[in-house]
Length: 219
Image 1 (cartoon, rainbow, N blue to C red):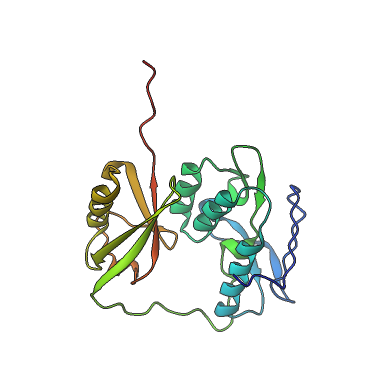
Image 2: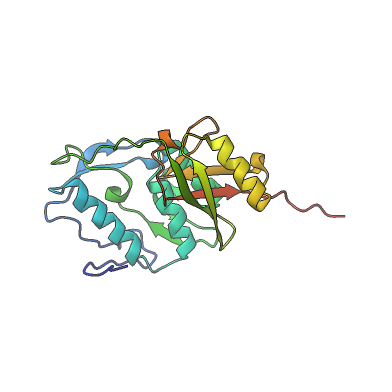
């Protein structure tokens, strides 16, 4: 995916993490950003919103240690609000150190370092960030990425439909019970009463489907 030009190091030592983001990158002593599980040191750098997006994409691309699927869960959590991030990590059985996702630990004990600039935006970002655009009503085609399946599902739906409607479509296509699944897009949960248009979901986009089947009982 064109991921090159930046060096990263991570060998299980939480202090050994090297990723260039900006010449004047600085974490601010005594100041914090984010809340809950997304609490990190506040930081500053001369970087535009578009440059930060590219750097973040590059960071996720170059991570080679640990398990790829764990990094995907961590990315989804980093891009979510604090409450949703906590839910995603709990569903993936990923623990955190010191109540912040700056250091995540999978079920095998592997540690994953996530620097502050991947979790929170800078304070006083120069140039600001791109605002959300207006989305019109239309029929859209989406892909659903199921947490426990290698295969995506394709759905066609009016973007004024709700999360509840989308769950019903998934039930009809895959047989996953609606009360066993949670839907996420862009790091935020699609709640049952949320319309797809209000979630800024557009044609061709991918949403995540998390579900836990009932545990088998011993006979």
